[in-house]
Length: 432
Ligand code: DOR
Image (cartoon, rainbow, N blue to C red; front, side, top):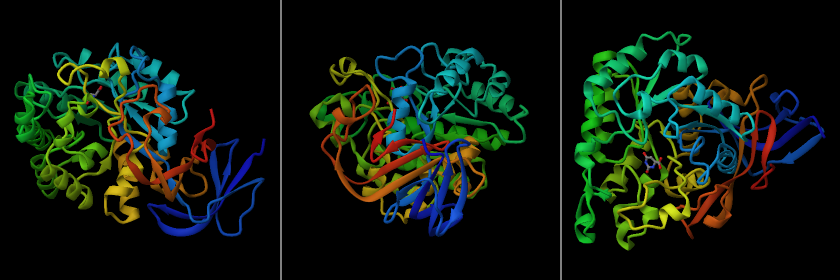
């Protein structure tokens, strides 16, 4: 086996700029050893016409391990990640048991050692994610957690959220601020709802979840970020109102960041017209007006990151009525192509949303945009912007099949992925 690989003549785009260069990877150390022109190595991969980017970072995935492995495992989810160009993913805590103790986090980290990307476990803010008792955050930080969230649900009680922020803000974390991420839904308003509340829910006779359920929690937590000075990260923003509030909060200098998912910038509530539960998700698909607002937020920097909310569900569980099926959709393998096909953003800005901006929020310094330089970990996505392809659920690496983009034609796809120097994706196929 060769020890060194050169990515030849690619267009390198990272935090430092956009230029044509070669990158030499030492597979035994997993590091980038040289960046420049006219470089050679034992193996050469022709990257002419391809974009060489830092590996992508997804702040929001559900890997279902432990407890729900019929839908996804850490290994299968990491294969989907590698195919999507992701070299690090933040795993959400709504597993069974929930990721609310150092022992469960250690179990996830141990399984992650066999994965095709870095698995960064989040941990719950509250024990059992039930909003009543704080999780042992200090111990969890020590175990390697970077982000706390009760995702799957938001923290409903304002006093509890205030205490969580105050407690987290006081924890020593090697100088980096602790991040509390919030799934913004006031359950008193969403109860009984299965899709966005509006014209379509009325037409279809399905229970609605109003935009205000998200807006209220975003408003509350912006207020709590001001009160406590502690960083709040808003997960999967979906409403025009919440994007506007985050924009204003940032303009006011508050410590807030936000992410948006590909499904919230590409699909509307009209997709639910056929009652297909593949379009059921929390927060729900909203109106064209909201989609436009999310896109504007991505374009002007209000939204810091594209995160997938990759949520695998078994075919049996999704094969129920719209009312009864669980919410969630696959996202890892289609995220970049959807963003590249649908968003009219300069390529550097688009890559920032997938790479150095989420990496900075999660404190994943091995995946920063400056990584394309000697001495950095070789976490790299090589993108073929010319590749046109059609999404087929049956061809995805995930165990689950619940993609809402079946049959959609997309432009751009990650051709090769390197994780710590190992080629985990070669010509669109995972290597193990
Ligand atoms: O649609 C969703 N599915 N939203 C969530 O917050 C949780 C996720 C899941 O775990 O399936």
